[in-house]
Image (cartoon, rainbow, N blue to C red):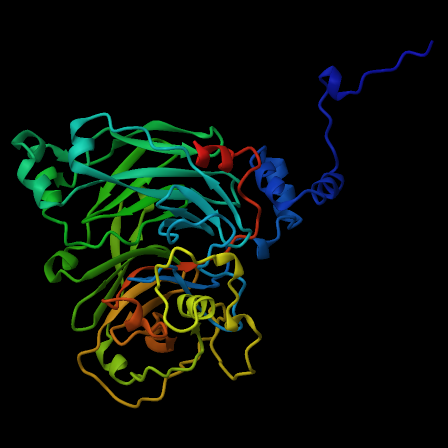
Length: 477
């Protein structure tokens, strides 16, 4: 009888495939699996990258537009260059009881306040388990958590959610905080965070030790309630959290640092926004009279130093641009809320009618638009200064931040007259992108205001792993 020999691998003998053979095998795998295999070893990562097996067009490497959450509107809207993409703020691929309030985003993944993780591009989603209860009096009475999601499909198909504590600025909390708590340092060290891992499929506590000084005391943090907390992001293995300081949380080594604003920011008390762009971590400050300053964070040699990159007065540029509400391109607002309700409820309708079924939504803007001669594109290297026609001017108009272009030195802004603008740092040009004012907005909301906005880079890799928690079982518990 012929004895069958065991395969080499079964006998503990290492089998090394030629790179071309390995590449051909890997080429047959879906993007999600390729992203996971890049983490196995250096040789596999080199093979995948050198043969360009993980297609760049599937990764969050290009800007599709800007998501904008308007105060009083049920769904976030999408501001982009035509033709419209299939991306929209109408998340009709999972059950909706309320509007999809977005807590955070990272490389194409959204974290909702309802603890859902959503990918609008692939229309995949997962429901996280409930958060563990607070363990200390300080956590329960005087802190609130904001979730930040970490996801990098080039490194791994998995994601993590970090719950970052902020001091509650409410007057009740300020009056009831005892002196011991008020004088305790903030942030504390160690900083204990609740972290959800899609690999472990559960919440766990992680400890982060502070390197350097604290930002101050709990009492001082309570007095900074007027400052905007927008502009949190993940970049190169670290979380950057915007408060009255910038907190850099190093995920790999369990440490964090407090990075204070440039001294000029403390003096003028402008509107401050953090973000990532072409050179790394950026801080933008804008005063009420239109003076813009841009700093870049130098992290070389283990030190953190803000380097002034750009300064300009945007007021004269803004005055030269169109204030009319009829601004045509090069970008358009999809007007999701208007089209959605006017089609579903012709005539008189209520924005928050719970009988609405989003699964039948079809926007007229989904049709191919007429040809146009718009010259500007978010991913073109050569920027053309397109100015809108000026019908009237208002010296009282102002600018606020919508976000940084993630890969080019461009700052997106909105004006008080609801126009979208792009300011190009290299050319010092302020360019009108189009009308941001939602159709019939005044009929929807008592106040016309942008609550949140962020540039969106879609990820078409099916990154929500099949081994993640069952969304149906969790959501029914």
